[in-house]
Image (cartoon, rainbow, N blue to C red; front, side, top):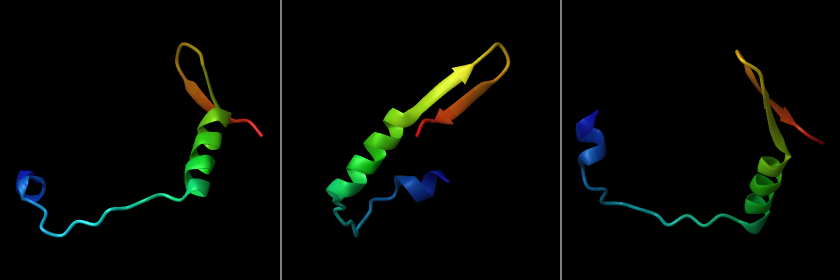
Length: 47
């Protein structure tokens, strides 16, 4: 496993996210609410 990640990458591509993708991810992360008690944690998605 170490050999796979320690080798230099010869071919790389720059990736640019679209504005719509960024907006979707930001809005999704804002809508998540984590509720928990002593034993469990629940993630709720608010609509």
